[in-house]
Length: 319
Image 1 (tube, rainbow, N blue to C red):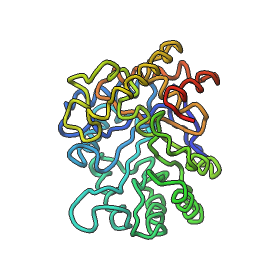
Image 2: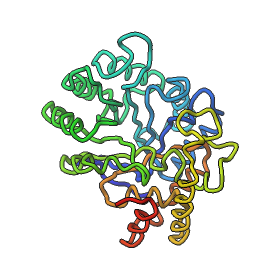
Image 3: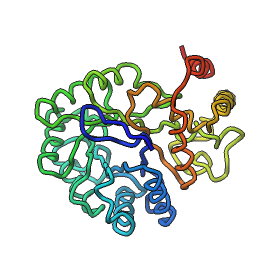
């Protein structure tokens, strides 16, 4: 495993981190979740990323991860970076959503209880709140850090202008923004329209979620939709009609290039996100430990020559 310094801080993150969004909830086989976490740690993945609403049902991923911490990682807490978030709907009524101080403080207290922890390493505001003053939301993050409930704070899903304002407020409060978590992949490049430049200028780290575009940038859908895949199930996050013939042709061409590079398509896709050094870590999800092993293989080939990058853009019709 390779580790990158996160922004202007003393913290280093593995270039591949494990997200517990979908495969650690109450509807999954617990022993499989446990195996994934153990294998990830053995491969050098020290960063485990959660949120209050991860499951399903909401809260279940934190509960299950708490069980795994107790049974398997009790002696390794100081070798782990554990993050969680709040910002999406968590409980009924006006206090269980968005970005008020009331919600963020209560949510983190609940998260710590579910995981059996005294603190998390990183606590994020999960999404911008259009109604709560940004000063209140960032003030809550500052308070959380000062209370010792989180060592570092971050933001997620903020656009460039919003992120710049949030970073400025946190800096003035004396609790710098450590990291921004944003969706980024070969197929989804919105962060290149200003956000990555803001983070680089402000010396804030960046961790990319969905770097494999919900699994599209793997070998899973090259020839069809497997019966055990996300697109074949009830998931609302990847529909069969998203996997068009035009997209499949592009994925096949990308896969051929990956093979030329001696990589799987997933490995090349992760290397592409990490290529410029502006992304600290890529955040993967996994339904089996073999997928973690495949993704960690990215460490063997991280660089691209200009012709390869040009070819990727040509395949995807990017200017």
